[in-house]
Length: 274
Image 1 (cartoon, helix red, strand yellow):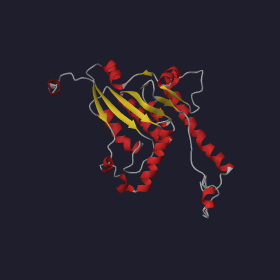
Image 2: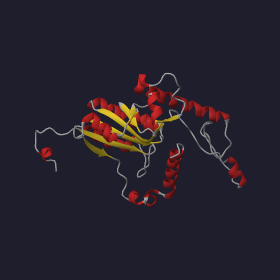
Image 3: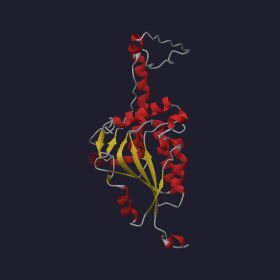
Image 4: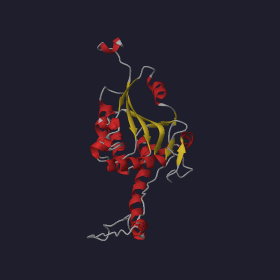
């Protein structure tokens, strides 16, 4: 036991709060995994305000997800950092892509492994076309709407050019908001000789050259180099529901919904070979 920590008025080693941001980003259902602003809000608040930390470290391992939730979480981190005057560092593990990179840019600096995957500054909408499948099985699709645009990109009906055009009108402003955030946060650190907003990804070493991250480094040695060998790290992680720890989530919220959530998250990871 460190006796000095129990004696009042003695100088304590610096403290860094550590927040793990792992998984797909989206407005999750109660008990589901993933990252959402509602679930993370109290955790982020405590990390910035409890124990007088000298800094907050974000451990990021996310393939992305909802642009809105990414924006809400990142904005909350920036707001608390500004209110408290506490610097924020991001450390990328396997991947910080799309919304994951959006979160990383909430930090004042970004560090990654040389083999981490970084980037994917773009917006994607993906689905399936099942019109031919249901016809082969003698299934008739019946849709009745009040308003011509209510049946939009129905996967059980042939794709319409006007629906695709409408989808692009939704995606482009999202992409613009993403680019504006990255440009504002990274500023002159970004390479001016290459288009970094195509949705492409890079490994950590290349990301340094492009200005997407600040260097190659792992959390513990980097924080020790910044705040001394005696720096204290206090983790703030999301708590998983009790039954979920034992693989029993389906019993509590429905097997189909849980399976769809898992399939969607796995598809996000698989997009980057993980």
